[in-house]
Image 1 (cartoon, rainbow, N blue to C red):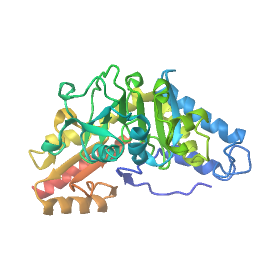
Image 2 (image 1 turned 90 degrees about the vertical axis):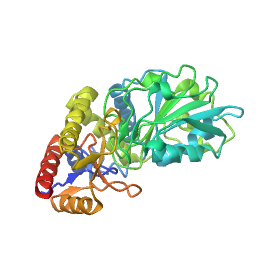
Image 3 (image 1 turned 90 degrees about the horizontal axis):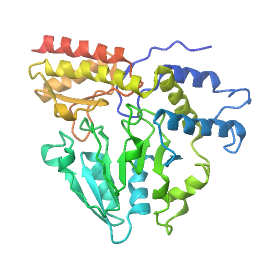
Length: 365
C-alpha cells in the first residue's frame, strides 16, 4: 500500500529531486526485488540478479549519451571530490603540465588538489568578474604538450554553464559534469574523461560516473594505490570491490525514466522551458531581481540571483520557504538565491515559483 504524501517543491542543489515514478518503483521493489525475496540492497554484487542491474545501467548510459566504443563507463565512489585527486594522480605525468579553466568553487577545489601531484596552471579564469561568466573559447590558453585540460561544465554555486566545448586536438579534455550531465545531448567523443557525482541528474548520492577514453587508461601511472587506479575498475567492470548497489539500481531507473520521456533532446527542451520561466521573470523585473550570471553564460540547472538589499532577500527566502519552496537559499559561500531546476524538477514547480516571484515583487515594490 502506497503512502499518500504531500510532495514539496524541491529546488535543492544536491542531493536533488528524483522522479516520482522512480521513487514509486523503488518503493514497490524495496522488499522483494524481482522475485529474489531480497531487497536490491541485500543482493550479492556477484549475483546474476545484481549484475543484470549493473550491466543494464551501463548500457543505458551508453545509449542515452551516444557514448562511442572508444570510451567505457565506470561506477566509482568518493564523489566528484575524489576525482579531483584521482585525475592528476593517474594522468599528470612528470615533465608535463595540466591546464585548469577556473569558473567557480569546484574548479578551484580541483586545481588545489591537482597541485599536490604536479605542475598545473590557469588556462583561463573569470574570477575577477566574480565568476559571472564562462570564458570564450578564444580566451583559453593551453599548451599542445599538456597532460590534459580540465573544465567544470556547470557551476552550481554561481549559476554558469558552458554552451560549447573546445576541440583540444591531442590534449585530453577532462570535464566535471556533476551538475549538468544528462541534461542535454553532448558529443562525448570530444572528451578523454567525463566525471559526475550522481546526486544531481543521475540518481542518489553515493555513485560517481566516469566515462573514460580507453587509450587514456593506457597512459596512466601504475605506482599508485590499487583503488585509485582507473584500470583497476576498468578491468573488473566496476566490481573490484562492493559497489554502491542501491545507488546504481536507482541510477538505472532514472535512465529508464529519461528514455521514456523521449531521451536527451526532450529533456533539454524541458530544461530550457523551466529555466526560461525564471530568467524571464528576472529580466522583466526592472532590477528588482538581479541575475548573477551574464545572459550568455546562464545555467539551465542552477538559476542564481539577488535582490536589491539583504533585508529584502531575507524576507524573500523566508516567504519562499513558507510557500513550500525548498532549497532556494544560495550557497553558503556567496549567499543570494538559487533555483536548482535539475531534470526531475517538474515544469509546474518552476511555474509556481515564477508566480511567487511576481507576487512578491508586487507586494514589495
